[in-house]
Length: 268
Image (tube, rainbow, N blue to C red):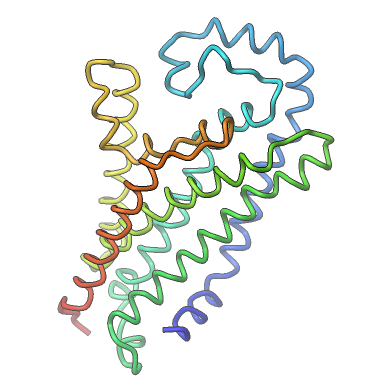
C-alpha cells in the first residue's frame, strides 16, 4: 500500500503544487485588498447593514459584522465559497481518477496484478487523497501568517487553526463520499455527476433553510450547514455536532466504498 501511496503522490504532485499555489495566490489577493477595505470599514459596515436580510443570512452576516477585522472579511469573501469550491474540485477529481478512472481507461490491471489486496489499492488511493487535502489545507489557510505580516495586518492565528480543522473535516467527508462512488462505478463522469448533484442539492437545502424559517430543519441534511466557516474564522469556534456528523459520514462512506470495491467484479 505504501508503494501505491508514493507512486500516486509522485504522479500527481505537480497538480497539487499548482493547486496549492493557486490557493495561496487567491488568499494573497484578498489579504492585499484588506488594508484599503479596513480604511473604509465604517462606510462598508454601514453599507452592509442596508443589504436585504436574505442576503445577510446567506453569507452568515449579522448585526455585529465588522470589516475592521481581516477574519470577518475573509470569512465572507474567501472561505464562504471560493475555498470550499477549490476543495471540492480537487478531491472529487482525484477520487474520480483514482479508481473509476483506471477502470475506464483499462489500466486497472496494473495495480491489480501487483501483490497488493483490493483493500490495499483502495486505501492507498484514499490516504493519498487525504495527504493532498492536508497539504492544500495547510498552505491555503496558514499562508495567512506570512501574507498578513507582509501587509502589516493583525490576525488571530487560533481562528485559522479552528477553520483548518473544520475545512479539513468538510473536505474529508466529501472525499469519502466521492471515493465511495468511485468504488461503485466504472466511469469518472458518474462520480462527478452523483457527487456534484448531491452537493448542489445540499447547498440548495441549506440555502432554503436559511431563508425559510419553517423549513430550517432541512439544514441538517446539508454538509454546508456543518461547514460553519464563520464561527471558525471569526470566533475560533468548532461545533461538536459538525465533528460528529462529518465523522459519521467519513466512516460510513469509507467502509462501504472499501467493502464494495473488494467484492465487485472488474472486467479486465
